[in-house]
Image (cartoon, rainbow, N blue to C red):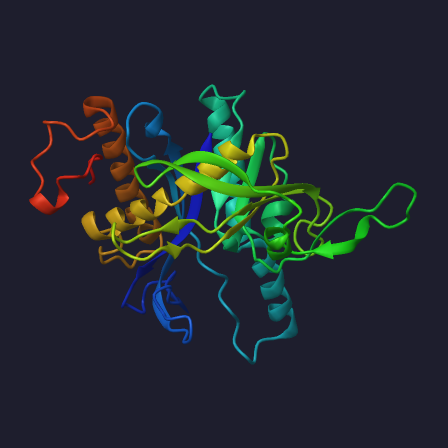
Length: 333
């Protein structure tokens, strides 16, 4: 069972909100970092593979929406004890620790719902490919995340050596450029239909700077060609480098889950633009995280009710679309 996790930010203008803080603006250009005042939330969404029954993409149903605020930094003239407590609190209260706690809670909720035999696969972006997330071993729960192309990887040293890590180091980019290993071709559902996708895999291997001695598997996705129009030139998407703790599941299933992770971005857009999550004027420390979570819970219930009542495809029960959108197959909020 695939679950997508991602962080999102809600812009705020009032400085009296206790949890609001200045943070990096995700809309800032890569050559200049801008700051924004707002709240930070962590969301988890269940990936429902609707393409198994109809010619539509996966639908993401929100499961959790939690506010993750950083630890308040002490003043410059604070005592050494206050600074020591601050450094300890930062290690325990951060985004990575919140992801680990959410993984444990989702595993418990899945077991209570009768899914003790199901494997929970959590898909995240590059911000979750770190020592904290990969080092947390949750029972019957695996993690797949995007990693850097220059991450230093290695195999385990041969038997008889005192060292654990092998001396030969390599990067995901070198694996992609290695002509000795051929590409494996498979078909996955993405962008409204099944498309061919090339990938390479290696494992078990080790990431000494990240997961340390926990074995991982590397998945390298080749650049995918596409055209903006039928008569246009051929473009290529950037290659993807994925690390996962799942060593047994087929690579095709893991790649499909990661491709479906993009649906959580659709959740963010509909929650903010359509439902107005984050627009309520709140100052109470208890109400600030609960009001957006209530709206997201109602949004998730609305999506689930529409699937149960009208199915995955857009039928006659929905209002007619304008001419420029008549090709849409899946209803949106």
